[in-house]
Image (cartoon, rainbow, N blue to C red; front, top):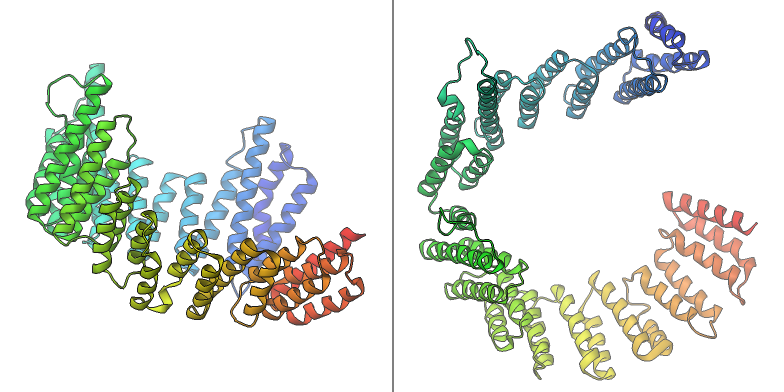
Length: 598
């Protein structure tokens, strides 16, 4: 092995000598390169090979290439590239070839090879890399697309790209993405030929044997791909995706019309078709041939007319296709248009009216989802239609009685309308809902009670909640209970709540930190109380939270009644309890703190 390494180092000598001779590197730097190269060569020549060693080798050589480039720019020397850079590039390619042969299944390694070749190697070499990669990873459509795009965009070879797509489709005959990109490529090719022809005609050049078939220029190849693909992939979404691609090319108007007509004929029972047809009305002028609107009023009127046409299509769609998905498309469109900003009050009111009509129609057909009832209720509530909001929230709650969201919406409306039945509805909700999903309702009840009821009533709600909510959900509730106690009754009340909950596990670290902070905010901050809170917190979180231990030590050091002599004992307790990274982090923080004290 030593002979192989020595031979490879000697192969480097001509390029290293050139680097020193032209002044890009000093003799000391050349020696350092040889030393590092020897180590890297040893690692990739030993019997047991590791992928990381090959990656490190390649990364070092790339860094060297970039450094050479920067130094060339600095001294303004651009010669001897064949002897220097090309030699390094060939060596890196050899390493990549060995690595990709050893770890064939590593796609990331192949992609790194491709990236390297794109930047440093020739186009012919990259074609070979793509061929080798695709021979192994023919089951990955994304790699075929990448190779074809490179052939089309970088090598400007439409024929090579076409061949790659055709080969890919033999492996993946039902892959939508492959058809989409192949379709796009043929349209790009047609556009490129059209531009070439225009340039030749403008320059009045004799194009000789060059022939531009009219069918090709009009995108006939793309049309063939479209026809074949929709026979295989019978999906409205795929159909729309091809139409969206075709619309990027102005010369393909006939193809666009054909795809659009086929979409309507083949997928009349798909909501996506109706949604696309309706939204298309936004792009069509009301009266073709007329001057486009110029004043603000005419523009608003034109937008209003287009939206009316869209809604007319949606109305027809809902009559034809009575499904929840179709109603969802209609409502989403209306909500999107309503969310758009406009200075026209009339247009804003019309949009709100259309949105309400869409919701009402879906409700009458019993095709509204839980989320849409929530949307509708909140929209009505936002515009102060309290009676209607109450009616809608009630209808949604009756349909989805097991949904905590719908109960929340109904309660939200009752609270906004200052109804006397709020507390009664909260009680009713807990009868119908499973206890494990009621946390949001308990929190809502406590928050409402704090603003509308007495302190005793609010505490009664919190006490009921603490008994009803168990497990991880109770952590949030206890934190809120403690916050409320401090807000409403000060430190004395908060301490009483803390005492009542201190054995009701589980807790959060914040539960204890809040009490520590409340204690510190008092005029007579008692160190005995702080110790109690820290000790209780460490009982729960001492094995994982290094910050708690550090804060406890700092408290003993900085508090007027602290006992600095206890810090050593706290430190050793921490070292016993903390595990792994937490212990290492604690030691590091403690060392930094001690250095700061000095």
